[in-house]
Image 1 (cartoon, one colour):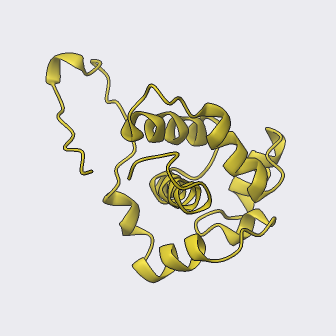
Image 2 (tube, rainbow, N blue to C red; image 1 turned 90 degrees about the vertical axis):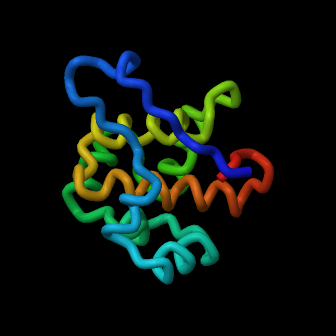
Image 3 (cartoon, helix red, strand yellow; image 1 turned 45 degrees about the horizontal axis):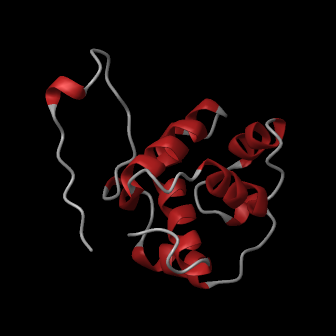
Length: 127
């Protein structure tokens, strides 16, 4: 089912709130890149996640995320079935920023991980 997101100004904080943007994720990734990642076997090496460079990998490692399985696991650990897909994505997107993943790639990485979970665990999350 398609979710139409409504933004109500009165619910936004005074400061600029940064949240996951499904479409903006495409600014750094091609459809082919997304399909390749989501349809291929998940590899342990974090640099196999498009958008994760050496600095982001080092920052993730310092927070205990040593491989791609840990990164997917982090999304699963944070996943709350009472939240919408958008809200779950927002939480993961914010966490990526907190741990030092490059800001320009937070949308892309969030989308890749969510789409990978969707493929690996059908029915867990609505896209």
